[in-house]
Length: 114
Length: 114
Image (tube, rainbow over all chains, first blue to last red):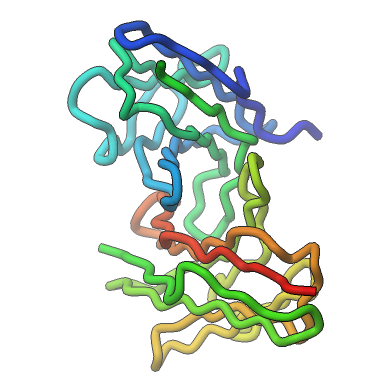
């Protein structure tokens, strides 16, 4: 049973380019969460999605960041016009949506903005 | 609202010594609590979880944690540290009213000295 998959594992972008991060949840999971981990910091919640719906985006920066989880295909975290401060590890997690069930994490995408 | 505080960003122990990593939480409703471990350049792996059953929870790799409501604590312990335990550890809280969105502590880096 494949776990949560994220790609790419490493992504290098120049300032001003777009970054697209993909996440495929565990089989049977329809809830996806994105977190950002800055160097030497913990994970910060960004957005929570179910299929075709954004449930909670309270942690998303107001500009340049967007997320989707289409009916078919992976969840996408999109960062437009990247800046150096966007350099971080971005983790995706999935669950079946119940509060008592743990989230299963992917290996992360490490974004470096040059 | 929910929050987690991990006391001590760095903990160092000798191999064979007791490991104690502290976590205090705040939640207006009954919480679910988790400990995750993160090895360098990897995603998070669940160590154990508290979901309102037994207050003493046993996890993988010999770790355990005790939920103490009166102290709002969920400290992680292991009787005898092993070199392979060196990693970063995160405490997290979620609730049934928060649709599974987890709030993470800032993490504790555990160093194990030979």
